[in-house]
Amino acid sequence: MTVSGRLVGLLALGVVPVVLIGELYGQALGALGAWILLISVLVVLDLVLAASPRRLVLERSLPARVRLGETVAATLYLTNTGRRMLRGVVRDAWQPSAGPSTARSPLVLPAGERRAITLALTPFRRGERRTERVTVRSFGPLGLSARQATLLAPGRIRVLPPFNSRKHLPSRLARLRELDGRTSVMIRGQGTEFDSLREYVRGDDVRSIDWRATARHSDVVVRTWRPERDRRVVIVIDTGRTQAARIDDEPRIDTAFESALLLAALATRAGDRVDLIMFDRRLRGRVHGASGPELLSRMVDAMAPIEPELIEMDWTAVPGLVRQVTTQRSLVVLATAIDAPGISRELMAMVPQLTRNHLVLVSSVTDPDVVGGVLERGDREQVYRAAAAERALLDVARVTTVLKQYGADVVTGAPADLPPALADRYLALKAAGRL
Image (tube, one colour):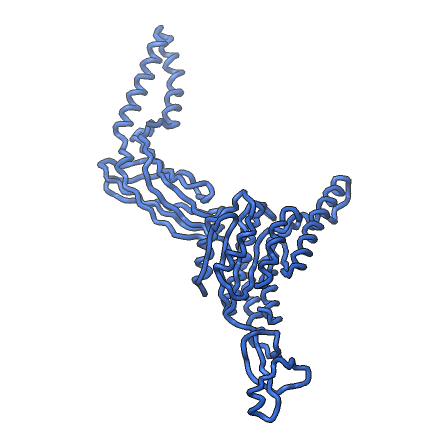
């Protein structure tokens, strides 16, 4: 049972005149008691006449998935199986991160009829956004008191990464088509897949001579090669504690997801096979054996519930995870944070194991505030901040230098710049015949 503001107002409104009238007749206390008794009788009568909220049957209609930041309609259907009209308020208990448009909705539902209440949901966090219960208050005809019940009506929506970087995809696909249509001289070293035979010209590698074909012709004949298609791209996303840091009001892991989605969309259009691994000290998610539209669909589904764990990344396990995916030479992209040498020690120790068999590309987010802080030296506080920023950038540069010495390539950038920068580096590797 609950009471309404109308009851409080009515009780307060009648106290003063009742007490004044009672004083005239010397019965102020008795008059006040009579007034309270009358109000109590009205409350009980109102409560008895109110429809039972437990006679409601609830159903939901929800979209299965929504991208982060988009707005969807969540509909709750209520059927009154009782004999009285229900007048009240409905509260659908969605998680706050689901972004419901309103907390409470009025309801007037005659007996035997059905009504729909629609909420606009605009989630601002990835993952499973849930609701378990619906609370209904059913007021009586006087509106003084209400019956209240909390009913089970579970529902959920999976909130996917927004993939805002898809706006860069058309321009990169155009460059990819240019690469596919470009005519270039095929020489050994630009690929491992046989392309054609042609006459030997000065400067050709003698190891490319096809002696059997030369024996059948009057001129020396060499083989030409082209980069293989259907190559492997293995994306490993660090889900450890360093990925929880927010840069430009976006967690590092979300930037890694955006970069991975753009790269996967580009690579699958280029005919390469893409695999995704999300790992810290245990396997958090994996996408293997998908291509085309199915690839991105499975990737966003796997990414949706992943949040960084406040533990250190186990880099020693990464070479084994890559071997489980493929044994052929592949492009391995490591999406992580490049910080001070002490924090990145395991990463630097592991990279040589991968570069022996694979082409390794390390992707990391840089903080624009740190980069800009180096230039701000107007007062003493800014000078100290500039010194700290300079030290942070030097640490990143040291780790980057070591990674390059071990044979890895490094791509860094602000959250908005990193996804297209990673896609551009992939296209550069394609153009150079390294992938």
